Picture 1: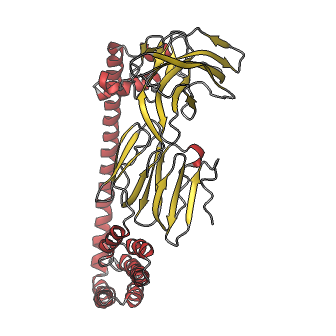
Picture 2: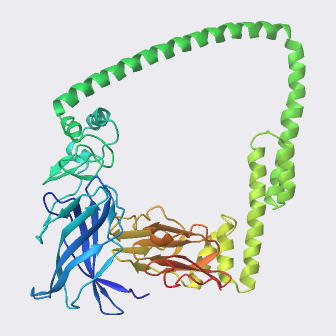
Length: 469
C-alpha cells in the first residue's frame, strides 16, 4: 500500500526560548504525495499551570539552497483545552505557501491561557535543548542507595532530576519550567527532589535502614525458631500417644488396612488402567466417565479434563477439515489453530496461512517500521512516543500493517491486536473475530472477515469506514 505522505525533514527536538510557557518538542516537513502540497507538523507541550486556549506560531521557510521563501506569518491553534504538561499539535497540518520548501525554522509568538494570561514574543529563533531524561540508575548505580532515594522523596524515581537551561526535568520524567515549585505530573517539590540527592546523607540513612531491616530479620528468625521448637514438642507428644493407640488397636488396624488396600488401592488402580486404555483409543466420552468415577484417585480429575479438551480439539480439527474440503481456507486456518496441539493442527494452520498469502513481511508507518518473522513474532523500530513499536510480546501473528502512528496485527485464531495512537478510535479492533487480513489507512483500520465481509474502525470524516454492506 503506497503512503499518502512522505517526510522531507525533521526539525531539531525540544526547541525552547527562555521564559516561554510552551516547548516545541518535535516537528517535521511532510509532502502530500497526492496533491504535491508541503505541510508542516509540530508537537508542542504546555508548560504553564493554566490550560492553554490558543497559540500562534511563526514559520520561516527555505528552499534546498538555503534561500528564504514565503513562510507562515502566524498560524493559529484555536479552541484548545491543553492542561499543564499536555502535548498538542501533532494532528494538525500547516500548509506551506511554497511547494519548494525544504527547511523551516519555527517559533511561538503568542499563547493565550484560560486564566486570562497572554504571552507574546517577537519572532526569535528558538534553541534546541539537550532534554533527554537521564535514568537514575545511570547516576546512582547502587540499588539500595536508589531505593533509599525513592523512600526519601516518596514515590517512584526512574529519572535523575536536573536543570536544563530554564527547564527542570523531574524524577518522574516530566519537563517543567524552573521557577515552578512543584512538578505538574507527580506534584513533588523540586527542592526536595534535588536536596535528597546528597549521597552522604543518603548513604547514612541507607545504613540505618539496612541495620533496622537486619535487626527485624533476626527477631523474625528467633520467633520462627521458637515456633518450630513448640511444634516439634507437640509432635513428640502426639507421636507418643499414637504409639499407645497402635498397640491397643493393632489387630483391628491390620484388618482395616487390608480392606482399604483392596477397595482404595487395588481396585482403583485397575480401573485407572482401563480409563487410560479408553483415552489411548480416543474414546474420549468413555475415558471422561471412567476418570470421573475414580474421584480424587491420583490425577483422575486432570485426566478427565484432558479427555474433555481432547474431544473438543478433535471436533474443532474435524470442522477444520470440513472447511478445507469446502474451499474455505480462512475458516480452516483459524479452526486448525484453535485445535491447539491436537495431531498436526498447528502445522496445517501455518501451511494454510501461507497459502492464503495475505501476509505483510515489512510495513512502514509515518515514523516507524514493522517486520513479521517466520515464527509469528513481530519486531519494530522508530518513533515510539505513542507506543507504535510495543510489539515485542506479540506471538502467533500471520499478518500485520503499520498505520500512520500505530500498528495492527492478525493472529492465527482470527483475532486482531493493535498498539500506538488511539486517535479517532483507529484501533478499536479488539472485539474483531474470524479475520483473515488487515490493513491501515491514514487514520483508520480495515479487516477482511472470513465470510467475505469487511469491518472498519477509526476516523470516518470522509466515509472511509462505511464498509458494513
